[in-house]
View 1: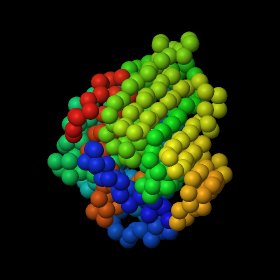
View 2: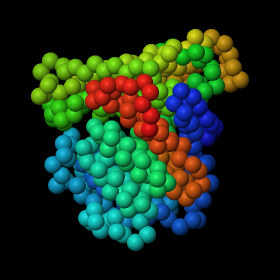
View 3: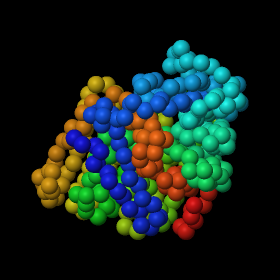
Length: 377
């Protein structure tokens, strides 16, 4: 299946945003221009839940030269748990100052604790570096705007590490919507539940007003905004399960309203076998797509159920199980895309305006701000 053509353009007319994801994988990765000089990149932080994505970067050693890692374990910012040092074996440890002043450095991945992400990324932007920053974009919308505005003024590549951006199933769903296979979309259901972490995870969540919505709902919100643009209204429901540590908001739902579409995003940390039951369902008057689990790395294929009222150029009417093959890596395609952006071979498929709107919707879904229908970047 040719993923490169899954999404050519999604025009978000009510937000003035164009999303044109460019995906590199399979034969596309193999045909990539690997003769060019390696991109010098470093990582600041090992405390983020996704910091071990350095493993994905290390697989691309013919594209990237990892010059060093900054250990941020001395930070007092809230974190979920200590991460293993194994992914960093053989890499050079250095201070942030040493890394940012490394001759020829071109890019940095920011993998600090959540509360340190934006401020750290701003320091990287001050050094004119391309940035891959993990989620979420903090709890201060103005500070996130400062980061994006600084990157825009300097024309710096900025990439948020939302984990579904290059997921083949999510790309298929976007394709189905873009090609109008599903007709007029009236409902989207998105779930990010799990059952890991226990009281220590809840203790971590208690540091954030938006709790689990801020920490996990952001992945779905990024996807929803890329398809539907600026919503009419965002309403948050932030609850704590019985006995939740320090009243952590660990049971959250956001209702995101569009003119003709209702979107629900939910997450709870006590759903038995929750990761395997995470789901995405998009309903239109001509069809539906449903995905559960959202991703898998167990050597079994990722599959989507597609139901169509009418046939189209690729699928007949009725219900189909679409096999998207076996996933092997969550972030490798993102870093391949980052390399092409840095080298000027493609435009960034996610604009500064998109990232700001995603953060704005997330802040409203997390109870940090009131929704304003007409606020702009």
